[in-house]
Structures are given as structure tokens and as C-alpha cells.
Image (cartoon, rainbow, N blue to C red; front, side, top):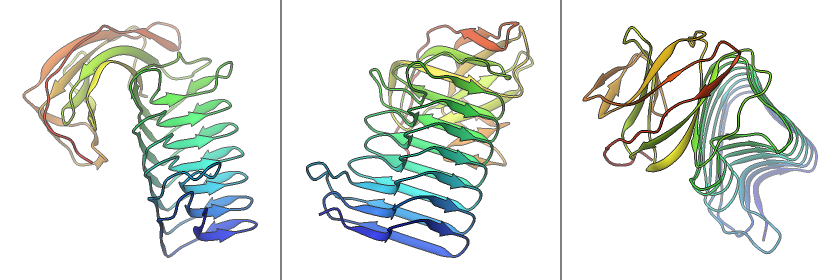
Length: 291
């Protein structure tokens, strides 16, 4: 019960190399740090396939204190609970993170700050990226695909702030919250799109800013978008496409994509203030899943 593939009673630091962890027991953890977990380089793959056991939750990566990711590659999968959880604050400065989880994909008990790197989190039944404090995005690529209903792609705690100051950001789920004090344009829009379909964002000249392949069906969902390419008082178009390609792809997220069989969903116009407004509702047809 509650066994971990790798555990330290104090701190865990990975500087290089390849660490492959799998826990199959109920309440098990892939990696469990008694205080802090720091990732400076190398590769960490952590999987937890067990179920929860009474008050013990099965999680791929858990730290009793803060988590800091400076570089490296993290892939985490949890069949029953969080993918990567910090009981303190979490700071992501760089690296590549891919999360697939039953509960929250990424969860911080305190503030969550993203300054760079590439992050993809898919949550089957809860928020994809969740902070129980403030959530601040200053740069990088951040994609959060949460559950439908009241769950969100990117979520800060009630009464706290969600700020998008830089980077390409896409969050999708059943709900969403407005940004506060952001230095970059951010938009919340209603959308319906099918699994396997690419959701695309184009500027007024028809240039694709980015495209994201949907990992599940989203009907009447809420989309959160932010990009350094969003200009003040400018209209952008949301569409679906059956296929997309580009020079750089990260878990189905493509910048400057070339798309095929595009169908317009809606348009949105960024406001003249920093945080953007509300877009229109739309629907799309699509194909099979990706995970």
C-alpha cells in the first residue's frame, strides 16, 4: 500500500541521465519526494497504474514541498489521481513536460509560476493545470486540456489570480476564468470541437498562429487563449481542420501550421485593454483520438 518506485525522505534532484519509474500498487507513486523535487536535466518517465487506497492516492510524481523544473524532459501518467503534484509551490523555468492523468494533470497546493519550457497536460476528469494559489504564465508553450463540466484547462484558485504575461497558451475545458493583471492579450471563447480535429487560430491576414489537435470531444466547452502575436483591437478566426503540419509539433500543438479542410467556427476581437474579451460559440466535426 502506498509504495513508491523511487522515494526520498528529503529532497530529490535529477541533474541528468534517464530515470524510468512505474508503480502498480494501490496508492503507489512513481516518484515521491519528502521535501522538494528539482529537475535540472535528463529524462524522467513516471507511471502510476494503481488505484487509490483509503486516504493514500496513486500519483505519478509527488513532492511534499516545492517543485522546480529548470530543464529536462518529464513524462508522467497516472491512472487514478494527479500526474504531478506539489504540496508547496511549483515553478517551471524550462524543459519539456507531458502529463496524462485521471485527476488534475499538474497541481500545486500553492502558487504555480511558468516562465518557460513546453508543457502539455491532459486530465480525464479534472483540471489540466491547477493552482490552489495564483497561477502566472510568463513564457513558454502551455497547453491544458481539462475535463468537461465545471473543470478547466488552466485554473487558479477561487479568489486568486490567473495572469498570462507571455508565451503561447491554450486551455480548454468545461469552464474558464478571466485573467487578471495580464501583460499579454488573453481571450475566453465558447467552442465545440470533436476528438482528433485540429483547432486553429488565424489572424486577419489568414496566417495560422497555432493549431492544436483535440484529445477528446468538447461540446459547449470554454477555450482560453493567449499569444504574444495577439494585437490590441484585432479580429482573429477560430476554425477546425482535419489535418495540420508544421516544422515544430508538441503533443499536437503546432505553431505556424499548414492546415487542410478548414471550417470556420467563430471570430473574436481582442480588446484595447490587456485582458481580452469573450468570443462566439461554434461547432466542428472531427476524427479519432490521439492518445
